[in-house]
Length: 173
Image 1 (cartoon, rainbow, N blue to C red):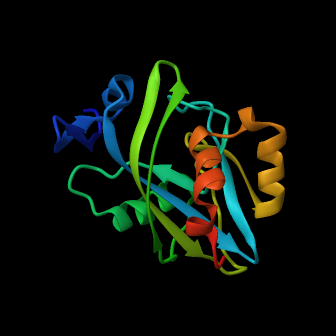
Image 2: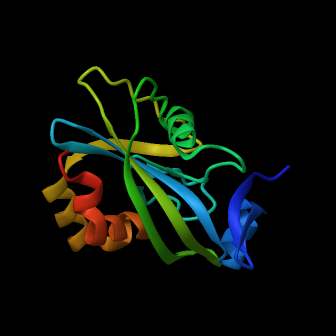
């Protein structure tokens, strides 16, 4: 059975199959998490098994809430499922909307609830290979410079977040 996510159809929020929502370019709900520690943020390189944007660098965790799932619960669930991260408390940083072609005939038209999690030095990160192929900690100036030099290595949403919403998301990090 395919995962059902909240999407807007004819102005009404309804359950929609996740891949179909991307193929049809339906506006849908999403959650993004940035884990930060010591002035750096944890980014991930998406598994080559991902159905869109495989092998590209993204923020710590991006996903879609299941139909009926609270956004903060979704953030906690996916941190554990993708990266083995537990025990962090997401702080809500606001809503971001964007639309981007993510390749393979798919479009992200997302209403994203963004969360920031402060981590300590003992944070355990254990990436799940089917989700994440690599992680690393990076300072914001370095990340912005990397994106400017080679934007094609990064997901469209990470580029949008940093270009248009960096202060909202990462201010006071």
